[in-house]
Picture 1 (cartoon, rainbow, N blue to C red):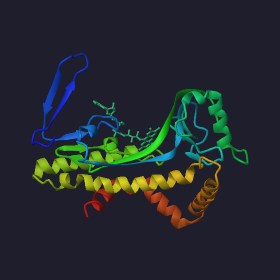
Picture 2 (picture 1 turned 45 degrees about the vertical axis):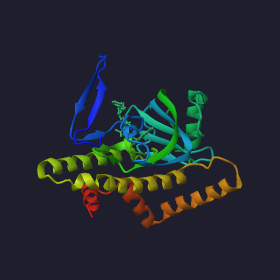
Picture 3 (picture 1 turned 90 degrees about the vertical axis):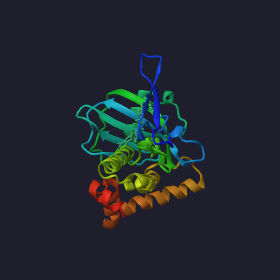
Length: 274
Ligand SMILES: Cc1cc2nc3c(=O)[nH]c(=O)nc-3n(C[C@H](O)[C@H](O)[C@H](O)COP(=O)(O)OP(=O)(O)OC[C@H]3O[C@@H](n4cnc5c(N)ncnc54)[C@H](O)[C@@H]3O)c2cc1C
């Protein structure tokens, strides 16, 4: 990886002989469990990681959305979410304890919990139930590798950073990295300019940490603290105050919208050239 001609070794499916490609650069786009990040020797990158302290039951159901809107519900039993995907398919999430098993979530319990956590006092809204197509549990965690490059290997997306899917930023960050790296390669080959490659990690990490912080803030606001201790009762009240400020202050709502929807791509590319 640190030579002028790094290489990737792979075995084609159906073949028993490994092949090798030599190249100028390697883009490591193979996710959190891929080989790119583990190819970097220990000590040459630092990993910063944290657990969110909650898990999710992630569901995909063959049911029309029960609302045209994304719904994030806060309930003493835990967070629940509803997101229409197509006119026939809806995604749902339910907060669960870290390490929970999917066998603890039979379909009947899933629909009951979704209905309970998303119930409205005025009763104008009803949850449409149907066939569950996919169901899994995931422990929510975050991780960032610094720097996002080693020699001629450039890490892209979850090979470099995982952001728990609370604020839906993971794929957005992966696309931002890819765009940034493509632009740096263009400058290298067309203008013999390597500034983009040299600044790749630093520029991407700025956005990664911006979204990690936002994701943590949103996660804390939306999820029910998971024990009945004195401290979690304190946290629950602070959480409500945060939500109240967001719903009742225009400047808070505008700041939230700015980071949630995000500025345009051009604004980001220009901002991070600084
Ligand atoms: C439940 C859930 C909901 C989400 N919702 C959103 C959302 O709404 N919005 C959003 O922006 N993000 C969301 N995300 C995050 C998003 O899915 C990821 O951030 C995104 O998929 C990361 O893309 P990636 O290409 O870096 O990694 P991956 O999607 O993990 O892709 C890596 C690819 O590399 C391949 N690979 C791995 N190892 C090798 C190897 N040795 N050889 C060849 N290929 C290999 C894998 O098979 C895979 O295809 C969600 C994540 C989860 C878990």
